Length: 337
Image (tube, rainbow, N blue to C red; front, top):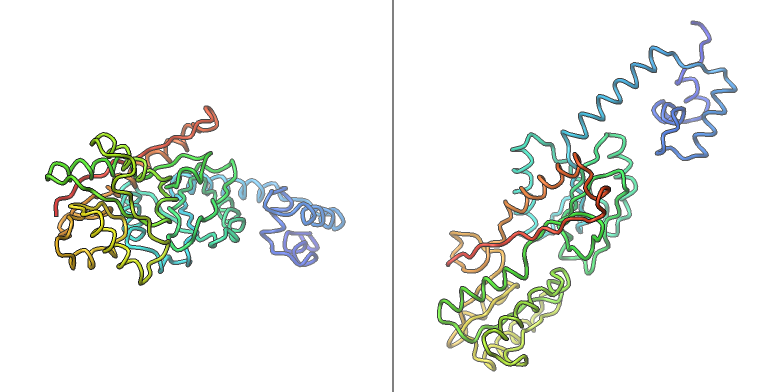
């Protein structure tokens, strides 16, 4: 009808988009309360009357999009050093590749979103997910270039599974490597090889992210082997690689005469080969056919488990019902180099 007030009319009068006006008139929580009041006041002033047929069609389309997005798309949130993750480690790249493959096998879309290294973009990302009707969220393991990263804060309307560290996310499900069990497995395999003076080397950054599980398991195994608590102390390197790492490693090995070393940083491979009697190395995150021995972290199983747990949470709301988030530790596998 000529002169009929529409959403476009209100949008023009208020300087907002048609979508923002529509959401404000429906009291959508993603529109600020002051903006909702301003839009609703202008609508009343102009004599706006919603078209029942158009409102029903809009509601139908909204509900359909909500259902489709909720079950077809999973959000992956990360706070890595860059939006693309270009500076992350091989571990992060492998982990993401297995996660994408597991989602694709289930017919799920994985929508990746960067919340900023300090979480400064979290609010905008969550508003986007709400608008798209996405409620299932996976939180990526944090960057190894950010010291003690902040947890990504998620509202109660989302179903969440994280990849740790578990002490960073007390109220969400967590799926991560079995750090404690993996070190004990490496110790066992080295003992089966006849090794008796086994050392442990890691970075401070890894110690914090694993909840010091490696050090705890190492001391338990020494005690079970009949060694004193002070015998064969582990070597903790600085958070980032430096020129002093090589000399520290060499002097540590020569002093304690290790015949095997369980190692997290790969920077020890080169200097280890230059020792007169190099100890056998057991590394974390090795893959078969790579020529190295150590622990395969079983990333495919980690990805599969996280997706299954998230889908279960979306169906059952386990945390709301019990208040007890799950802690799932994925056991690794020994790889003989």
